[in-house]
Image (cartoon, rainbow, N blue to C red; front, side, top):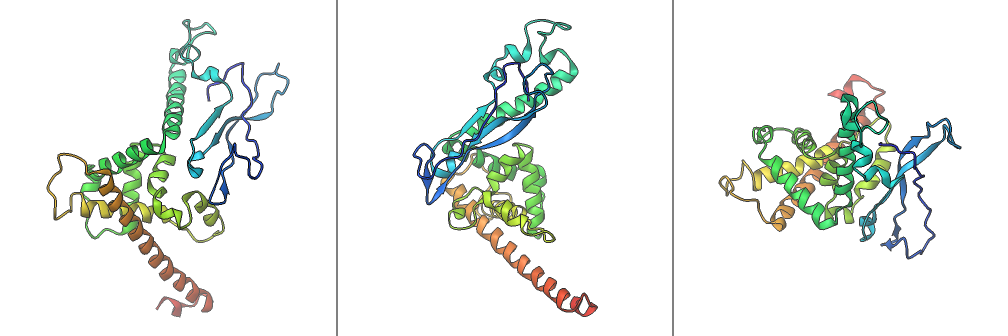
Length: 279
């Protein structure tokens, strides 16, 4: 994070139940949360050494309103405080004055870009998501995937390809954030589910990404029997239909694989890890 002598503290108030300022949808009231922390390093500061919130966020999209990001200071967002007003060794030199500063500025640029993407309205986010999936469909490694490759391989390739176009958190949104999750466990609750399994890996993201990619490849991409090489992207509704079907396929294969391995684990346990369980 870029710092500034005029830093405040980013907080996350706890909404009161029924408070209209923090809407509730289908019984869920989305709270704000602190998502980044920093330590006060100035020896002259009153709270020297104390850790404080530097970014807090409110994901209003979960309750059909806008999102909010609160920063510890607005000074970060002025070019003059990043690129400076004098050459080194002046204390007013900017991040672009040294190699180390340029490396930091690259990270700051990524933070600003992530904020812009995250704050975008749902319709714009959907457009970015559609573009991301359509773009990776024609990348060289994806186009060369074998038709019989396991679904998790499709998933790994999809996540890797999407990750070359967006941040890791955005990739997870592009994999999980589909209408199917209004009836099933929403993506933001899956970490809680995984935390309850200490020994078993639940690679649901790989299976969902694999289901989406494989369905796109077969229906709209390089393996489609109905289409030639496209001169334009499909309509959003067609993309969403194919992707939603891919999510269903991914969930089914994930469930089948989990059921198969759960039975094997049960056999191992009941046989006290005897060899007969492997037959």
